[in-house]
Amino acid sequence: MKVVILGISGRAGSRLRDELLQRGHEVTGIARDVSSVPTQAGLTLASADVADSERLVPLLKGHDAVISTTRFVGSDAPSLIGTVQAAGVPRLLVVGGAGSLEVAPGVALIDTPEFPAAYKDEAGAGRDFLNVLRGEKTLDWTFLSPSALFEPGQRTGKFRVGKDSLLIDADGNSAISMEDYAIALVDELEQPKHSRKRFTVGY
Image (tube, rainbow, N blue to C red):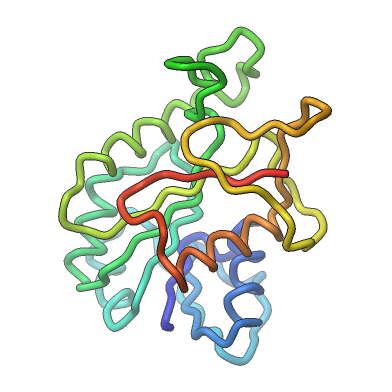
């Protein structure tokens, strides 16, 4: 497939780049500054601001899917959806956050007393972004929330898949490596099981 990664220079974007290229997909990587991204076979790089629809549309045209890895604070979900649709790209996959996952019926992680204040703005913006997607009936979207601890680590290929509830292991931990997260998202790209849905992955 021909896939765009918005935010190619970030930590999640770079792991998704590696996973896609390893599986033989063609990748177009977009970020404000792509100078730090190494050149690789199968990878095309372009500098652009995600908010600049006029610049983005021609860059997205001809691709099978767009993966957005950009921060939610400052993002505009309707604008991004419109840009993807204007480019004629049929699928949008979004690297989500854990804050909107439920820890009890009707109780999101972001609304618990223990949720770190430093992450509230980003998590709240992510929840808002998901809610906009849930109202979208035309574009084929998927929103993948990681577990609470989402850091670079090992690529094991062993993880659980859930829906809207935070995944916690037997020791009370909620985690997924960025490498295993990338496997789950590219699996979804290749064999869609969560069309117009959110899902989550964790150990």
